[in-house]
Length: 425
Image 1 (cartoon, one colour):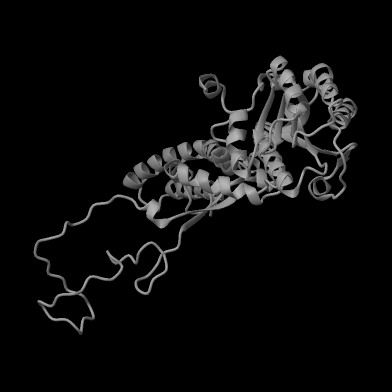
Image 2 (cartoon, one colour):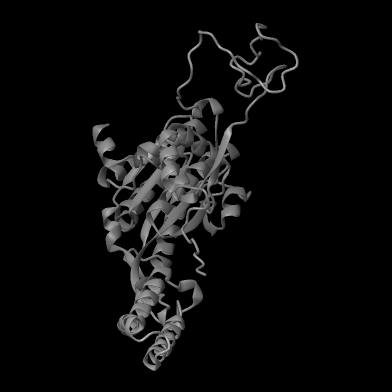
């Protein structure tokens, strides 16, 4: 008896091809659902997919059916109320389907179609039309890690690594090799036996001798095992050094008295978007949280968004801390460095030129990309004008203003849109 084990990634009764076709067909509805889902997530919570619901009316498929009109004669089993010629009222739900699931006093409803997106599918839909700028340089910044790769087959291994096809092929070859000689000899003896039976009969001593030899050969053939431990082949894997890309994302946020909870919430959503976006391009992502008022501190994610300390505003303190952390822990030769800064634009007048100097001479040469968002409904502050000078000198420095949460996603798309789209804008 042969036991076949299906270890493919697709589950039972599932088809990867049909799933891809379904995702392509309802791409618009799925992208809308994915965009809504990100608002309730933590900045590092991407280890799961997302449940997506599509209205039933959107997944109706065209089909063939009989047109109305003509003469219809039907026989329904169990009918004890109607006779031939009686007319039946149309159901209140229109075509009898019960409507689209809304509230009502008649008909039956249908729930929305709900299915699960994997982590990879979730990110693919969310950032379908975006790309990371200045990504060519990434290929030069890689660290070596040991990864298992396939290296042929071996005769030793664990049962989980058995290669069924190779093992059965080896067993078949062994049986053919062991049985070829006895089968040829058996055929020769069988021909001799047939000739002797015609001339001497079954009681001849020579006939009985041949019959004994034939029985012995057949017994040997039956004893050849179908599969032998010698036949088992195992998938061989060896660990080899492989380059892996890694990145660090600095989240810098102003927590001075002018940054209220609404502005912090807008900043959090922007940071979430950037983190999710980076995950698609890099295998290893680290996040550094820096909050500042007159002084800057490195904190964890919870304190970054919820700590209550506040004060004035000195932006250069955060930039100096970020530079020190890069020098100590994230050398630009080994890491792809991204910085996202959120502020309301308010800063000491004498500090803004210092910020421009720090960025232009010390920080920007180390970075892949710097995204600055100013969350304010008023006029630009002095920090904005100094940062404009930095943007003129560095193509990988971008800045935008956000007035309300509805502008977060459009501005994010504008910052990271593909080169072809950016060139035609």
